[in-house]
Length: 480
Ligand code: HEM
Image 1 (cartoon, rainbow, N blue to C red):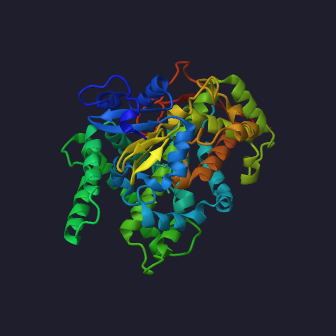
Image 2: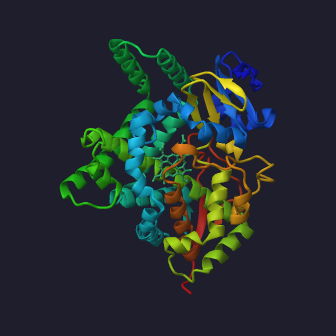
Image 3: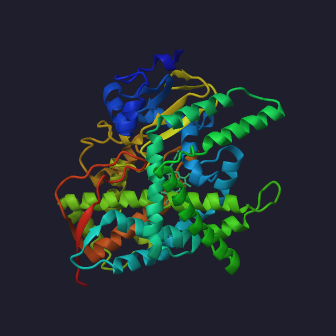
């Protein structure tokens, strides 16, 4: 049986393996690996291997078929822990299963259809502020809208007037994530924690000591740097806002069909206890952040690509004109195939979650290779989406790749901006509806063009945001 040692190593190793290159290029290193090694390869952090699965069938095998043999990597959990705590994104096993079950009804397609009027209302209010002839910072506006939608639908709260302050704080958190993704310290800490996990069945006192050490490794190193101070200040800002939503709801009471009511009313299946404030906070914070930042980034890319591709722009406008100026319902939005294609193609091009990493929790075989327990693997979604055999001419922006006919032909594991397997994004349908409604209302009310022809690439940090602001000149359309 072939082992990790037989998996080709990416060229260009130094004393620290590929840590230095990863630090500077982040997601781009996986594009180089896919180009040089094809379906499967490894990069090294010092001596620690990270197995990179670039082929759809390997991604599917690990994330779906053999999902029971893997958990989210400790590096990811450690990076998200300071703000997401032990919420749905970072938990595992039984606690994860209970949380997912609790949230599932809120993300059921039927429930999501019911959110359309609230989503439309936030979008309309935000678009009312756009002025004819104005130069718009698309990223800032998309953040204001998607944050407003997340706050309204999940917490029945209004953030439109304070979105700049909250988004600056969230940006600081994502900067920390970017800094951590590139930092060797996170991999050293994660590998230390993984080593601690290796001995099984320890006597109780040692087990408690192990848990305490792993918990300590999760916390950000309290360096007295300006960046770290910014991180803690940012967490406080968002925490305060979330806490206000929780306190407000506890005071006003009332059983609304939103996330907060569900969290506050939830009882543990086994002992009937309610969630404590920390658990409610972790869950709310996870959903609030995961629920808007990624959608803001991908809708910003939609506007960027639309503005630069006149033919795509024309077809998009033409499709939306079929609504005759009426704000679409969820059902009507779901029929906007080309508009959805724009969103899905933007997610193919620059998937905000550009990679999914896991660690083997038992010995497992993937692609015919034996991976021992604690082997780290990663699926570079960004590189996967650029396979010319599946997406011909991958650097061309083409929404027709996502026509129903083309989608049906695509092999499984080839397109996964929302992940795959049991940990697949719970908010995928939510995000898609939100993007459809948003793009439809924009098409109905505005025309726009880029302020500059200079191309903008992605910033290869946590969510592949545009590296510079996407500035658009908007023109109000006259009512028909
Ligand atoms: C998980 C991407 C929107 C909430 C994930 C994962 C990906 C992803 C790739 C899987 C991570 C992994 O397997 O390690 C995206 C993208 C979005 C988006 C690209 C928008 C374009 C949303 C929205 C919400 C949300 C709107 C909530 C309202 C979550 C949560 C998880 C998750 C809670 C963790 C699920 C679990 O582990 O059970 N997302 N997401 N996401 N997403 Fe999203």
